[in-house]
Image 1 (tube, rainbow, N blue to C red):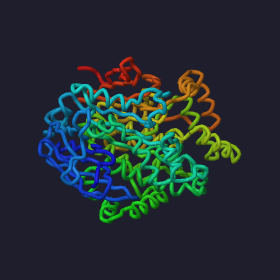
Image 2 (cartoon, rainbow, N blue to C red):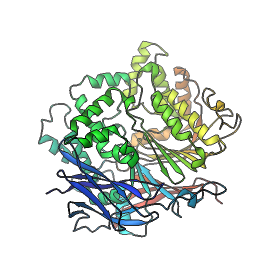
Image 3 (cartoon, rainbow, N blue to C red):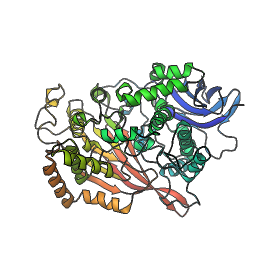
Image 4 (tube, one colour):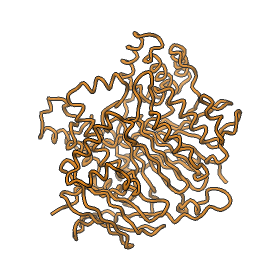
Length: 584
């Protein structure tokens, strides 16, 4: 008899029709899965099989716009979710109201298809999910668990409309004691890759660990989620450089690791990012579902993607009323050859540009999800830019070899380490924020660096870049600041830590002394000036935390909460509550 092994996860909710959603599950055996809602909406799907595991992504149709309805998961005629003994509230699907044509002016809640209290988007990254041995958690309460507990205990609490998980959902290179025991039961941990993840089956252990916590399982079943990978989903500093890639590919265990990592990401995270229409048009999804065992079809796809990253797009675009989210792959899409080094390949960069600039009148807020921060503390930024220049050979081969060692030792692989890509993103953001239909806010959402902060870029009196922006129809011309407020909002970790000496280093990176050192590195590396300058507008904050944007019409507000160990148990403490747009 088939049972529910993992899930359900509520993934895609259609904000255009308000009537469709997708629910992801893993079953214990091949079967047909049904999602049945209290309002009569439903959907069924047979499972597909990968490496002995059985999954379904159920498209639920007929939902009532502007409603919240409880749902059950059935296998055959047997209810498998919610569990009979659960203490948690029912899992629900909340849909936005039907969008109505926009009248004069831009961005009313009614024209957005948004709830009257706006669109609430919570985000963060870097969640070490393992429960601590012995009960004591040295890094403090898990922010996701704490959020789930808070929402489950208070039916009146405001829930996010969507949860953005910006990378490091699992840690393939840092396993828990429990996972290591499972690994040791199937292979010798003295052989490479040791206590790290080796293959697809072992990746499933990580998702079990991350998604089986009862509160988190309930949260993910009732709050839609969007996901993107970062390095630890595969390996620390994944795709740092061409030399790094050559070295890792020479190891006997890497091919299986990267293929399994991409396979497991496709199954557990990527599919749920797609709309039903995108799923229906996806040839890989069709091939995997058409076979009694889709392992080889998915394995072939993953191997081909690793060999040629340009053949697959992991980035995607989502719409939440009059809020546009563009989630960007900053890992697999990289071009690593030093002479062409780029965070995004040409096709990916063109896709991003179109995803951002297409029909700007249709959104009031633009969110760009990047697992890696675009703007770092100025010293760190200049160090990465300096290092990239050395590795490119600006001071000769000896400095280039030294630069590569420093790059790997210092994890110098953010946007600043890809200078041309950094500059092009600055140009793109200026264009998005400067046209006659510019949104109220343009925000880059990021994680990775295990703390939270806010930065606000400033452009010079002329458009950034190589003049491309000034040739566009939306360009208001030189000498004008962007119309939109542009911010980078960085929030990490959900549950992890950062050593105190690194905390001190981040703070020093913002100091005047740090900036002077950065200017020295810039001169030594002959990097030239960055097209933007920026200041810290908030933070840094250290702890397990989540940020939430509340977007209503052209208004935007930001909240930062941290999970703290209170007397009555873990609780969410508000650290920051700030309006990002003018009141009135």
